[in-house]
Length: 304
Image 1: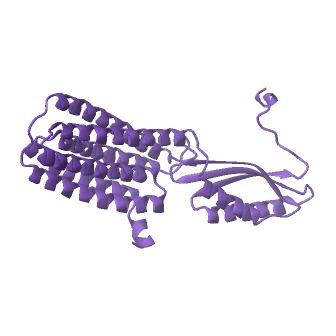
Image 2: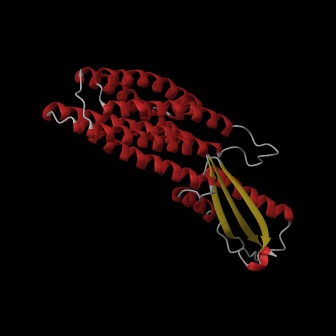
Image 3: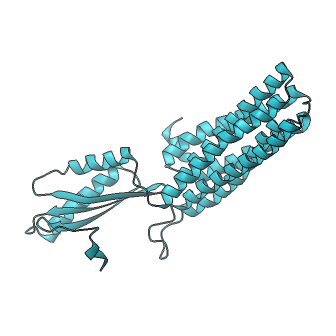
């Protein structure tokens, strides 16, 4: 898939596709549960409802994230994507808890399964749709640096693993006749998606707390600065943060005090251009200081 194709697959379009696929998989997996009575397939269908809710919420948050900066939000609205990821994680956790509750009751009150072949076929078709969409969404998420897309893709992959576990469980029931295996597999699947939901919530919280850029992005920033290495120029107090698709870097650039303002500004502009070329979507803020002036941060006196 070419870069041009991936750029055309915007977060909004991919999440709208996720909504459509979620509706189809809900129909397929609910029908699978209805014809079999399997609590494992019920857990699979419940997660598809979570897919639908999270995709709809994701569309709203991605739309907000793309709004331009305004007086109330001078740095933009990019962090809205973290709300989408966190909301999806919370829904996953809730679905996992409901699955565990339903499956625990079924362990102590097992019920025979019916039309297992039809149920498995419907579940596999729905999972195949989710797997294909997740594969495309991961590629689009990297191209657009969208945490909302990445979160939805991870959830779809979790859904695929859920279905795989359910298929294994139902196959085991068919071979052994042990009806409690259906509920046991559902609980195992729920624990797995519970872990994934916790990871999404944690990652969203870190993004809202101005987490530093990724190590590979930091390496590109440092490489760009190294290109201006000179005994008359020095960089320090470098700090970074990320907000959705955007990356921010703040630093001080020291240069000789006798340089003219025009010359200093020209060098700073060159550094900013190099940084933005090295890291697409980066916003660089560079404060100019004379070589013999140091800025201090973190001292108690700074709070006075």
